[in-house]
Length: 386
Image 1: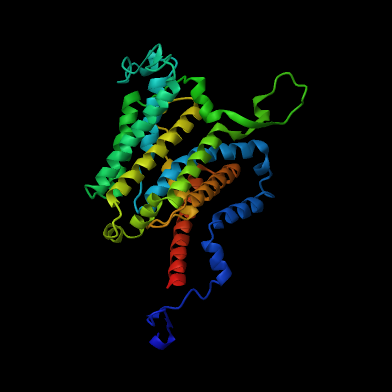
Image 2: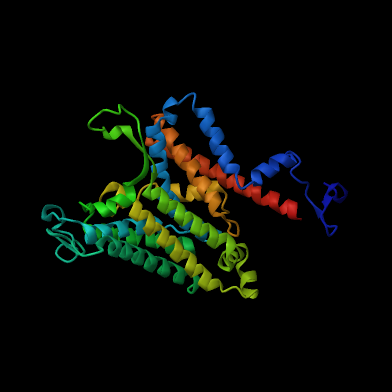
């Protein structure tokens, strides 16, 4: 290709042709903050004729209940990806803090189940957890969960920011070591029962819909569908606070600046190390908050709660939303839409009665497509700002 056939940028330098195959309006749609939301609505409408149960109140209620804990954890991952890192230890933080919740808040303990666990007789006994019966026990237990998460995040952040260790390696070690520690604490046993005040945080209704005979003396549980719940309220509150922090504050501008170019940010006077430590602490705090919702929903402290494909769901949802894998671009509203799409995708795949292997393969393909779209968005932005 000759130089004369190349387009010129603003400084007169030759550059490759633009995406001639992508019309301007299509490019605007791809770059829109609401692109994934439009995609989700289109996907929903296309599948409704083939999956009538998709619009059932019970299924919609289940879809929303699956969305809120995942959203809380994904919010924290958004900060880390935006700064140019990754946090693989979120699943381990969830398992550890869930085990802590069980050990501190359980209303009773079983020697047959936990007698071999290191925490038996120390944090929990037959009379329950260490905080059982203490005034404000639930809030103290939640504070302990958040504190444990913050300490893990602080360790990750210091290792990355001050020891210059790769985020992938640091958090991978955290995933393995902290996850194993949580399992060792309880010997892989679940801890229950938990107090009702704690369980309400994961299952409590604020607004629910009842479909059934009005004169029925006892309402079957399957006919009550929850649409506004405490998990919804907590998740939306965290998302709104994170949105304001990332988009309306100096700290948010610092996060994007560090992710875009760390060296330039340092020269510009951005406290890069403190920003990196802070985002890892935020990520771990969000994981602990998600653990509260998951543990309360399952009514048990489960050290294996964050294992399996959970991390795939979290990172996949954030990437699908549009947060750049290379750092420098991330919005909480993108993550909200990405989580909605990912939960909707999982829901529809389950309604199709596909095997777990097929579901994971489809999820992997969708995440790959999202990564390709991420690259396309980056190139479009570069061309339009050239």
